[in-house]
Image (tube, rainbow, N blue to C red):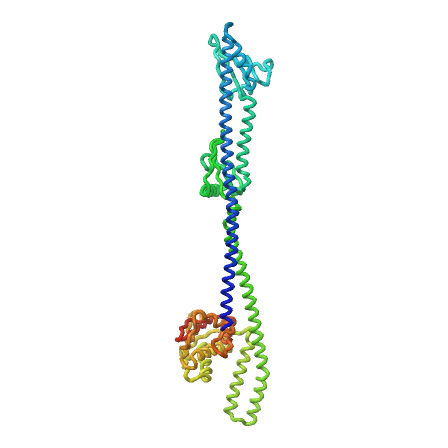
Length: 501
């Protein structure tokens, strides 16, 4: 009994130690994960802030370009006014100012035409007037991005001043378009590995996306759920870039950050599975080793009993020939037969056991009659139902009788040779139930399972093998169950055996 108490104590100590080790590991891992997650989250925030700043820069650049465009328009208007004044000037007017205004235009391409689209004068263009005389076709399209400035001359005659963006402005405009294009590319292909979706002003039409599976982005339901998930994590970034209109940038935690959230739980699961597998392997190995020991001991016991038993059978026959008292010889024969039965029981441990149908009620009556004659008369045995009732189940007769004898002997010991033992046999459609109750000392509930372990005994000179053998016989050889149904200290115990029909 002390062995199992110590074993149980050590199990609890090792269990608590394992819990502490796992808890410490998880706690430290969680701290590392939180630090990494904090750094990862900081990177995401830095990325979002950078997007905000670059969007502001692009917007500022666009505003600046609009101002340059307006300034060029003003310059062209001033140029047209100067041209008009120059054409309407009299000999007394000072023409130097108007000539300076016209000559200082060194960047804006300008074409002046009459009402018949005949080119009158040009400035800062790439062709010569002697090769192109009319403003038509592609040239007209090129110079009509902005409405022409009408110049009124004498006699209701009009001239038209066509212009387009200066070379400097065109180059800046190209740079702005590249900046906008690179802005969206950098948002999609971000170094922070942030899943991102860029939508139009409706927040439903996807313009671009990054760090998301392309095959899933073709699924509208997945896109809607992803956008909702992103918006729940972070407020979308609103940008209004040049001529592209309002755009919304949705983003969420990176895949690495999402993995880090669940890492401690995955680690705990892996450790748990490893410990479970290790426990099952060691438990299976231990049970296999115990089985080998049990089988070996049983076979060796049967072998050791076989030789003196054969001699005893011969001595009984010799005593009969010498005319020894018949009653004495009969009793000796009974004990020899009992030894043969015990030897047969041990020889069947570990061997393939054949089950045959027997009347369980009859078997129990026979087993109890054998026990009655060998225990104190103060022990009262009762059995239900009556001996004539037939309740049949497949059993190995010698091994099953051994179980009943072990239970009865333990009950007698628990009552100190004075009390009552009652056996009741019942059945249903699929099983036979045997309940053995005694009026003994009882068993603590915490030891209901421990009493079946090898070596456990409450007797000073007991070996603690009777209940262990009984459990192995019922469960291993009869595919049944044996357990303590109930027990009360000072009132007694009920053992239950369940056999399959």
